[in-house]
Length: 116
Image (spheres, rainbow, N blue to C red):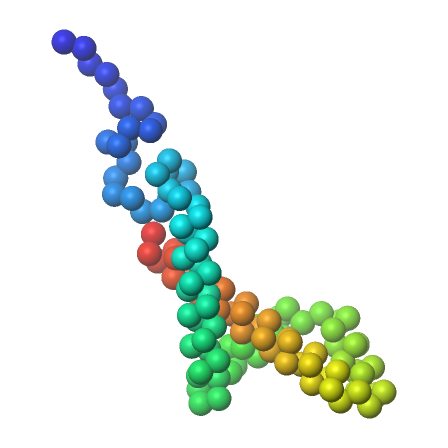
């Protein structure tokens, strides 16, 4: 009788599929698609709650402040000084959108880690 020890790729060496990055059965495209779906979902939830929920608004503000660069602030100040109200509005709106997307992606990554 021959005895053969299981190897790295044998199904018995891995438990149930959990999405571990070193598991040969893990499909990175599936994980990326799931991340995009969760980010979109969390982004929509944040947008819906930001007007009514102070905690959500504070989290978005914290995200915005944490990643706001000096260059972006200087551009807003200069546009305000030149009286370019539309440019200031667009810059602030873009910063808020980036903050929401960043917060949503952080929540999506945390959710993926919980699922694994």
